[in-house]
Length: 168
Image (cartoon, rainbow, N blue to C red; front, top):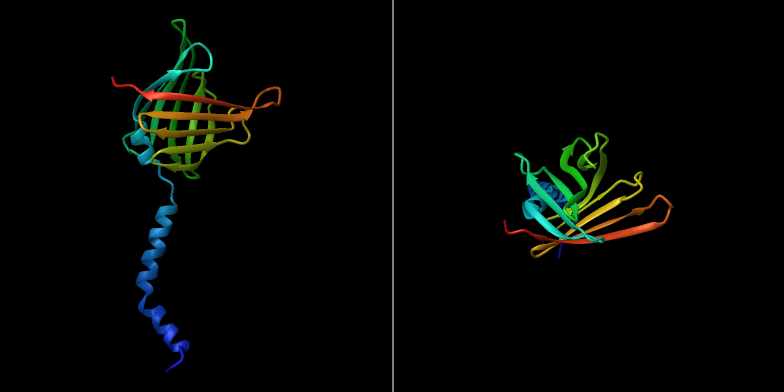
C-alpha cells in the first residue's frame, strides 16, 4: 500500500479546482441576504387589532426590481387615523436597509437588515430608542410583528402585533 504524499494531495487539489470554486460560489451566494422571497410573501394589504382599540394596517408593494419594496402602515381608532408611516426596503452600498418615515416626516429612521428569509425579516438600529429592532414572522396568512427597544423613560419594552392578509 502506498502512502498519500504531497504529490497525491497536490494532484487532488489541482483536479478539483473547479469543484472547490463552484462550492465556494454557492456558499457565498447563500450568504448574501436578498429579501425577494420575503417581499413576495408580504405583498398586499394586511390588517389586525392594535394594542389599543384600533385596527392596524400595512400595505407592501414590490418595487420594479423585485428585491426592493415600499409601503404604508396606519392605525385607525374610532374612524380617525391616529398613526401613519411610509416605509421602504431598499438596497444601499452597505446592504439592505429598512427606512421608516414615522408620521410621514422628512426625517427617516434607517434600520440595517440583520436576517431575511422567505418567511421572516429582522432589521435593527441600535442608535434609535423605540423600536431598535423590528421582526416580521410570516405564518400562513398571518404575520407577527415584534418591536423591541427602549422607551423614553429607559424602560425596555416589546410590542407584538398580529396582522392577517386581506382578501381584497
